[in-house]
Image (cartoon, rainbow, N blue to C red; front, side, top):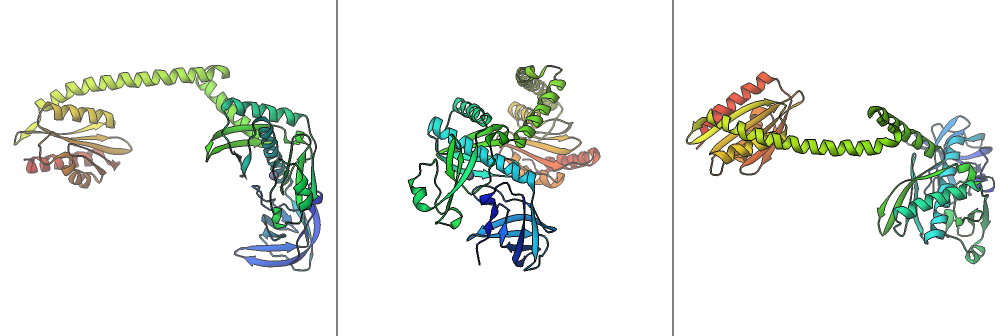
Length: 407
Ligand SMILES: [Zn+2]
């Protein structure tokens, strides 16, 4: 099979061309189409492929093997026929912006910090690149500012095809071996005064076309770090989404955008302190409630048996009440909470009581249709929602059962 003539190498801004179909084979519910020439960039070097159409057949992927391009289409095309190829221009331009952005960040990180790009991935809505060293937050901020500053200088981007000997003699930021599996020819992408490296991807004409580059997240990765970044339209969309968030929060807090952060932190702190105070009050209340419950509890074989249903009690409240009950006497308690969405239960037993909490668990699970378990003196579980009357009936049965089996 002859290699496909790659028109994008000589003219990366060619979005349509004519070609002849060389081969077309079925591939599941799709077709693999080979043409004599193509303006479609295949996926490779961390970049997804172009989309578009070939004479009405939709192209949803383009792959390359041994210099041959395989266009994955939704329709068969007649071998030998002349076809017209159209690339999805918006998608191509977006890929160009992301890929040029990656070269800009990498070239500047190398010159500022000696950081070496060791990985690149362009997804449908974000891109990542990996460095061999970890940078500080301050270094990242400087890298972002410097990259955008150089971007605004609108530097020219151009490519050059060279053979292995020439490549060997060149000083480049990065050299890739066997680009496109063609060890006899290499493509170098230059960003004037900023970067140079071997690359088979699509790029802008001038850095100004990228618009803006935003580094959105970073974290330690392997022995270095991974950075998430957005370029051009993607960065603008991200800004718009974040502005919607801050606008909504500002309205919610009835404040100005610039005051949202301080107010959210203040309210978060207040909420934490209110929760702490509430827990203290619940603990005090449980202390008093435990006394009341024990006074009216049914005592069997010297063990106070308590079975109750509360509306909307949380797990903390029942845990605290159960602990008080088992501390204050020889007790076995089954505390259930009924809410609109679910039923929860807490079982606790004083030391030496038989059955212990976890021994009683299987019977409680069966009676309530619940899942749960725990240790000797304490267990908790949850069941799907049920009616109040059904839960009362199950509680009554459990109470009778406990009185019968308690020792
Ligand atoms: Zn590249």
